[in-house]
Image 1 (tube, rainbow, N blue to C red):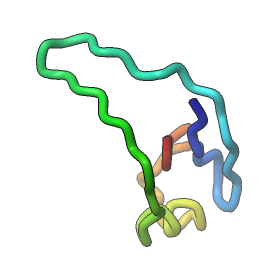
Image 2 (cartoon, rainbow, N blue to C red):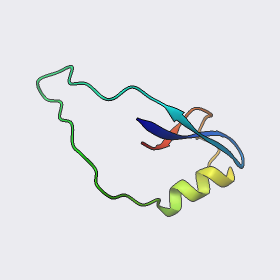
Image 3 (cartoon, helix red, strand yellow):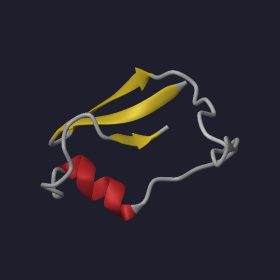
Length: 60
């Protein structure tokens, strides 16, 4: 599956990631058919959230 990954201020890339797997009885996997990006995600991508470290997955 693809994931949008924050790399640095103004830098992002699509990376391949393994599909999720259930590892505990309380886990669930849901299928997302539509998504959007929120304002916080946009601030992260602009570099306005200093606590967000490179490698953070924004959308998967």
